[in-house]
Length: 294
Image 1: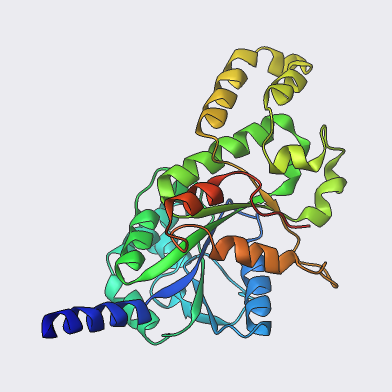
Image 2: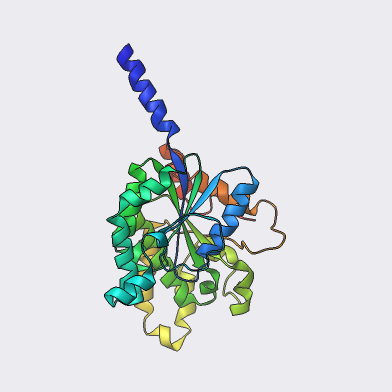
């Protein structure tokens, strides 16, 4: 009986020490830092204690209130100057250095018990598609009882170019499979999308990633892409076979946000697995179009 009570107390302690949050990833210029600022303001407004952790050693002029900054440990500029590395190799070195200094990160995070976390990550695509350091950092956070969802931002202007949109779908799928976290893909900067040209299809086609054969046929009308029609068909087949990629549209830089926009996104992130542990809910959350921002 005493043993059961001890186990129960240990389990309750483990549950009470859980921390929740988001890892914000995406290509350079996709709006990760702006998203962190907007989400920090929104979460603070609804009463959540929020801490933003900057994991990007190249991030300068941070606009949000930063609770933990990796630049206190290492900066990209110092690595490039001292080791004579380029920006891409320098970022990889910085992430490997952070991975080798988990004790520094743990000490910083331990001071923020009870907060909801936003991790602003580097924008180098390789870190999220095939290099292991960033994934290892996320895995270590899980061992420290962090329950995280990946928020992957993609610039919405890629929707105006069918070829680029297929590339974005491939990158998003590769990121989802590599990062191995509950995942939400976001089309950012929706206020600017019309400046890059008219969409070939309506917005739902891109957010729900509907029948991509229409996109391949549209590409075939271009003399350049016509030569690569078979390749495009095979890429599309891979994306559709996995049936994992969908997007939520978002514009965080609006003076008067439409009611429900941030709320819908926050709910979608909160209820992505493993926040909801039942298998049926996991399958539901992975279905494209479960939650919409309207």
